[in-house]
Amino acid sequence: MSKHLAIFVGNAIDKILSGKQTIEARFNKEKILPYEAIKKGDEIYLKQSGGLIEGKVTVDNVLFYQHLNSQDIANLKKEYNDNIDGADDFWLQKSNCKYASIIFLKDPRRFLTPVKISKRSRHPWILLEKD
Image (cartoon, rainbow, N blue to C red; front, side):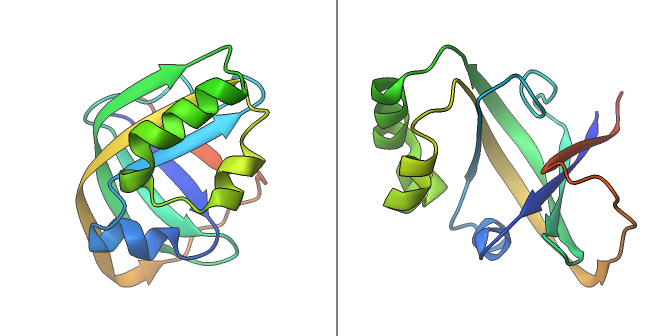
């Protein structure tokens, strides 16, 4: 089992930890984390941008897509948005991306006391520990 640190903006962490958001979708123009580096059973620690690690989830399944075009992105929105809970502007911002990691989440756990971590990287996803 690998451990990942995912950085979030807005209220996504609260939606994940409450169970409202059961899929995390990461879209990129290049092959960068978590693309092909995450698998079922891995743990994802949830950190607010500029804030603390508020909890963690377990990966239930993951799907990877490549060579996406705007129609593919529209199809992913139609298929998964009920579980991603993404606004229209989220999808509009992703319309030029070529790669997607669709991560199905389970067992959300909020930490009683959020954890501080010294993070210097500006990357939105970090592989903390590889199995």
